[in-house]
Image (tube, rainbow over all chains, first blue to last red):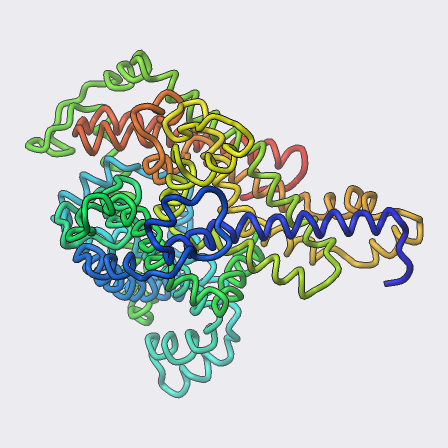
Length: 292
Length: 305
C-alpha cells in the first residue's frame, strides 16, 4: 500500500472509529434484548443503564413465552404461511418469468407493459380490501397467500436470469422431445439456481415478517401469524396473560423480561440463518441492480 | 407469406399453445389482483354500498374529494406525509451513500466484510420487532431515559410526545436500512475503472479529492436512479411502521395519508371517501415519479424508463 501521509492515517483512524461505532449501534440493541431476556426479572427491573451481560441467569421468561398458546399457534401459522406462500410465489414467479423470457411470443410487450405499470400505479388499500371481501378470502389464509403471489420486482429479476440461459440448451431439449414444462423445470430452473435461492429467501423472509395483510384481512385469532401476536405483546403491552401463576408483585417484573424473550424467540430463526444466507440476500440486490 | 396478422397469431397459438396456457395464470393474477383494484377505484366517485357493489352504486362525482380537501385533517395529513418523507430524503437517502463511500475506503478486507455483515442485519428484522424495541428503549423508564438520566435530563416519554415522532421514525429507519441501502452503491463503486484512481494518485489527489472527483461522479447515475425511485414514494410512507409507532397523542405529527386511509377505511368502513383519499395519493405519486424521471432525463440523461 506504500507510505501513508499523516492525512491518510487520520482519515483511516476516523473511518475505522466510525465503522466500529456503526457496528456497536447496530448490534447493541440486540445484545441488550438478549441479556435482558436471560436476566433475573427482579434484578433487571432495578438495574439502570446499559447491560453488558445478563443479570443472573433465568429462563423463566422463555418458559412463559413457550407456554403461551398464542405464541405457539402464531409460530405454527407463520411457518405454514411461509411454506405455502413461498411455494405459490415461486411457482407463479417462475411461470411468469419463463413466459416473459421467451423471445418470440405475441402479446409479450403488452404483457410486459401491463405488468410494469402495476409498479407505479395501484388501486390502493380500500379497493383491495373490497376485492378480497368479494372473493370470499376475508378471514382465510388465502388472503395472505394469493394477493401477493408475484412480486413484480422479483419477476423482472427472474426473467433477466432466465434470459441468460443459453438458447441452444433449450433447443436440444426440444429436439429430444421436451415440452415447455420439462424445459422450465428440468433445464431453466436448475441452471438458474442462484437466483431461485435468492427468490426463496426474499419471499420467505417477507412472509415471516409480514403483519399488515393479516391485520387487515384476519379476524380469527387462531389464524394470527407470529408478527400479529408480537404486535399485541410488544406494542399493546399485554403480557399479563402469560404470567399467570406469578405473584402480582413479580408480574410487572417478569412481564418486562417476557417482552425481551418474545423478541428473541421471534427473531431467532432469522438471526441464526442470517450469517449463512447473507451473501444470497446481497446477490439478489446485485442481480436486480444490473438490470438498470 | 401473405398470411394476415390474425392468422399468424392463430397459427402460433396452435403450435405453442402450452406457453400461452402457462401465461394464463400470470395474466389472470395481474388482472384480478392488480387491475381489479384499479377498476374498483371508481368507488372514489360513487357512494359505495356493499349491496349495490362497485358497479351498482350511484355516481356522486367529486363529492368525496371535496370533503377530503376541505376536511380538517387535509393539511395535517399532507404536512405529516411530506415532512416525514422529506426528512427521510434529506437524512436517510444520503446516509446509505455515505456509508458505501466510507466502507469503500476501509482497506482491511476482513474488517470491511464484518462491518457489512453487521450493518445489513437490521434489514431482516420485522418492523413489529423494531417497533417493539423502540417502545421499550424509548419508554419513560427505558434504556435511553436511563442513560440520559445520568446526565441529569428529565425522563422524556418519547413515543407519547408529538414533537419526537418524526425524529424517531426517520432515525430508526436509517438504523434499519442504511447498511442494506449501501449495497447498491458499493456495487456501483466496484464498477468504477481503477485506473482513474491511479491516475488521480499520480496527479497528487488525496483520498478526499479521490472521493469527490472520482467516486461520487462515478456513482452519480445510480444515485439519480435511486432518487427517482424515492420520489415516487414521496407520498406513500409505509403505513406499516407508522401504524405501529403512533397513538392518538402523536397523531398531530404522525398521522399520514396511508394510516388515515387504514383508520377511516378499514376500521370505520367509509370506503368511498378513503378510496378517494387513496386515489389522490396514488396520482400525486405517479406525477412525482414521472416528473422526476423526465427532469432527470433532460438534465443528466439518467432515466428509469
